[in-house]
Image (cartoon, rainbow, N blue to C red; front, top):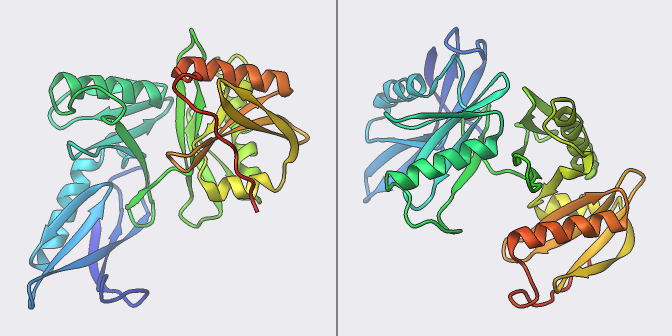
Length: 322
């Protein structure tokens, strides 16, 4: 590993006066990769200044810029597992923990500091195993919706964190769950996820990338024997900009109500789509089917699983998009 500190000449040079340029020579499968990690400043009083970097969810701080190279090298050496940097991290917000997650062939592997390693072919199962362990050792608090692990991707240019733009999800009674976050690439031109032993990606194309990536991953899971019906895989928690783009390419087909919740219905030449507006999250959940009746059945099944009924969920309307 070769690491140099260089003056930053782009963007907010007061906030980010330096960049750590890291060249991976032979330590990982990413040999030949160069990372440009921003070095931020934090003022402490009128004259005192502190420097810090954020790498794969971990924050390193020091009063002396010259101390950063050794700290960064130590962290990267600790993060490298089976010759690779993590693909994701799980973050426990309240507890403050960060848990690296690696994609290795057809398995996902999560590590804990000095503790067990959890592996499975499904990211959803790894998160479940890790969550149970963290509850058992009292790192996470009481079980509940507010106490869960959040996934973030790794920006392979800066080693900073990426929020998912949506998730691909399969939750069918009697079958193993599939849950995979989808991220934008570093250049903002593609979206990608890891599924069925490979990174799956498609170019961004006016919202159609959501449909195309779902289809590619569904086909891969079907071939791998981890999906029985292509429509069982659906986009979930879609960020508003992605729904805005996708919406413009769909044909409105009215809608229906399930357990007091209004679902807008759309179609294109490939699938029918039901849209649930998740107001509390400002996200959109999509249900995919071969026709309107199939979509409605899938919404009903998911609402029953989530315990959504008219007694606890008042009717809401799906706002029109400009």
